[in-house]
Length: 334
Ligand SMILES: NC(=O)c1ccc[n+]([C@@H]2O[C@H](COP(=O)([O-])OP(=O)(O)OC[C@H]3O[C@@H](n4cnc5c(N)ncnc54)[C@H](O)[C@@H]3O)[C@@H](O)[C@H]2O)c1
Image: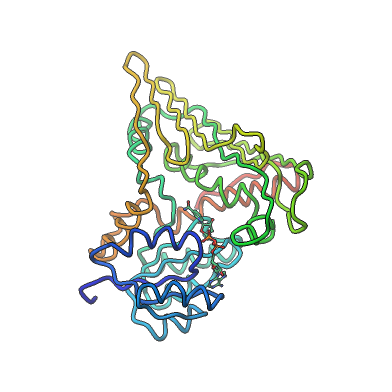
């Protein structure tokens, strides 16, 4: 490896920009190449950092020496991760890792065979508010979890909304957004073994013609530890009152998280209430951990792996199946 860690991006849109804010200032990182099916976008971002621009991952990785790749693709566009696996290049992939379960399983199996360093954009795993509760839950297991994301109704069909509002591209809000909450249920409480979901459709008004996602979904989860969870997604809070929430109840502990930053109010029997604010620069923290793991060839610095990304989509795709059939889906733990 050269002095600096040479980083390339596949997908140069909104979330790539969020990662670039910290990575462009990281003293150990050289941004060397960007690829996007939109050539203008790849060129515009690459131009800013004196990097090379490509329209395909294969050509980029064939022609540019790279130490780590960030895959920042919409859910339907995954698959190029195999190019990194075949070359033994560690990678970071944004959540959800895929829309196609078979495709994700193939990548997971190739990653495992190579013992390749990978991580998924579940940035909340780096929050002090989350890890404080995780330690406590180790000997006071979660009994009930509730939470989800509620936003307004999408009105446009440009930019991220061009794919987000289409179920066959994003997988729907539960798959695309609540994947963060599913991941936190797994990280805090352990594995999920059964999924039963209900969807609300066709109630939001004045939506773009391409809008095929649910207006809302509620999803019940059975936890391997015997506990239960109820998660929700909705894009119907046009009059206000939406937001991100997560509540965990154990025998002697209640953890209330509020907002995107997952600020914590922790109540424990017989103890003072503790408040922990969420870190605003969480992408910078998550990316620095990945770069450290790549430089030191030490996966213990990252808090999620491709296998965690696969486990989360097993849950959200089971929820989609359950929304369609009305039946609960049992999950096989791998
Ligand atoms: N961790 C987080 O909190 C967070 C926040 C926002 C988005 N995301 C995730 O990041 C992913 C991307 O979202 P975004 O907001 O950047 O979307 P975006 O639409 O802004 O950007 C995606 C980019 O990928 C490009 N692209 C599509 N197919 C491609 C392909 N085959 N090869 C190369 N480039 C391709 C598009 O042209 C676009 O420029 C989504 O899965 C989303 O869920 C995560």
